Image (cartoon, rainbow, N blue to C red; front, top):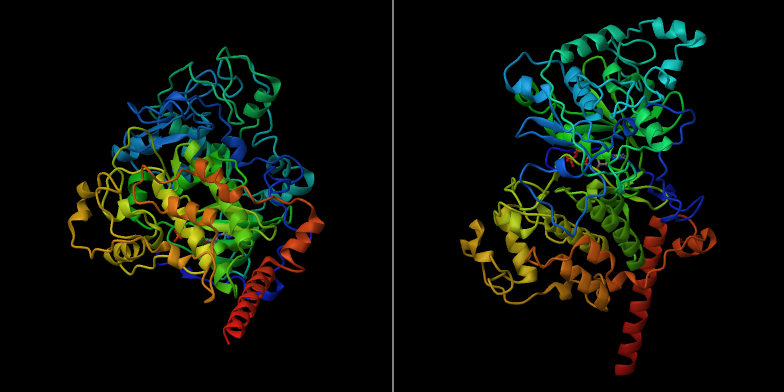
Length: 600
Ligand SMILES: Nc1ncnc2c1ncn2[C@@H]1O[C@H](COP(=O)(O)OP(=O)(O)OP(=O)(O)O)[C@@H](O)[C@H]1O
């Protein structure tokens, strides 16, 4: 967790954690990856973002993607440098929308309110507010069936007789709120931004200079696969999907639709609450976007880190990536991301465990982590802040990556990015040494640090400063040189006077067998760890190759709940981790006694 975070104890009742109580461990077949089962169809940000996208415009101009990699899923690119939001569709409805959010605000026109700007971005992302594009028509001009939108969603249906009076009632609460209540002001009772407010936003935006271009190459389907033709023929389901998009411009739901239960954590970019959807009873996590820098707010209308996070999370759909269900607002223009709720984060869980994870647990968690990272990298996104507190775990043993505030899209050839990314302990040596260009390998280094931490139950390199971080890495892995890392000597930080440590001592930290209780690792496991913690980023293993590594070949994913109960033990993963650690130590003690008895 980055500095500044206030950790709020979340799981004091560790003994009652029940990781396998109902279904046992259900990786991956029963993992929650099927969207939100909330009864009648509701407007969700996920729906909104289902814009057909093509391949080409997803990267910055002039940036070529390597031929061997294809983008499976194209989120919308916010190109801040060019003040452009790029959106594209199967038939290329929208290529580049010059976003008033950026153009206006950057070009000194009066700043809009946060919610307005934010809603604009969302609506721009959806591509429905572009001048000349009729919402009733699809992008090729064909008539499109209007699917559920703000007017046909359950939000709108809230205004039937029973709820009508409630929706008209303007609820005001005093600022002294009861716990569990969000402060509300002038939103309509059904939690949707008032229509006057929405339409004033709409008309403001209609005046903006929006650029819509048509493009016809690069076809991609909603499910992330590439279609064969760009002819414009859309299946019914495609039309449904498109029609299902919600116009965020006409209203985000209100945070008052949720009952606040407790604060989970306060990080650098947001406060995270546990909350309950008042209508469905579903437990969710609400991340309130923090406005750290008022100047950024004035300039861009919305914190860029949060915009990036929402853009990426809303675009992605993978069992190892936390899902954003929708974005809600309060009447003070605060914006909240509504995410699926996960019971634990890996950092807090490990802190509360007595013993480290078993190797089989680590394999299982690593597989999920690598699958998520592979998905990100396949989709041209660097997470840039992988660490244990950003890995969420459910009671069913699902692992999901969260916190995309530092994430960004990358391309080839690499462009210079900031090096002040990745929490120090998990930061790759090339970043610490000041490399201006870097790529997916920075995430893989973090994955290596996380794997080591899961095995040893403590961070691998706990540097107190950047230089101390490098020193700790060099002390364990040996001081790098040009032979093992081509280009090392050109890095700005390489000229410092580091102590020469000639050997890689990592194996000492993770021996094959140990009598001292240190984490043990098979040859295959060590090979994977070593490849993740390879100095040269070009030689560092990729997520794809890591998933195919021998270490995982012996791991069988078990889907039988009875066997899983046995494997995980009676109660919880925590219990099992403790038990397996205890059993390991008891066996070791037995052998030590046996050996000493023979020696006597
Ligand atoms: N969907 C979720 N379900 C449950 N807990 C969550 C969820 N999302 C985040 N959290 C908790 O909130 C913490 C902080 O979340 P997050 O990392 O997204 O915020 P942040 O402000 O970006 O933090 P940081 O300072 O680490 O960058 C996480 O470590 C986790 O404990």
